Image (cartoon, rainbow, N blue to C red; front, top):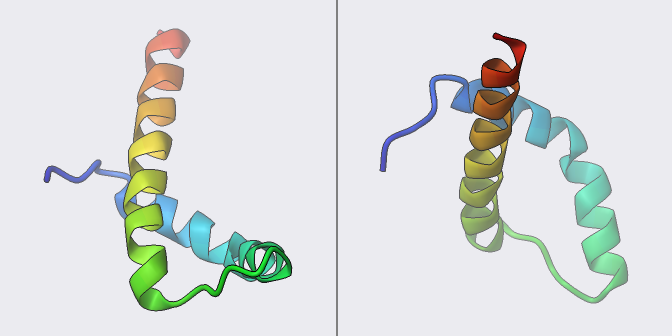
Length: 60
């Protein structure tokens, strides 16, 4: 899978909000572990990459 050039920055943003996300999921009874979060992080970087590219195109 090709990674977006900004993927590392997107991951840093995700890690900033991870404690809040973990708390909300645990309130719903969903345990967060490295194994369960990996697919969500991949999805997050795809969404952020697409949003970044869209914003970049609109700025032109």
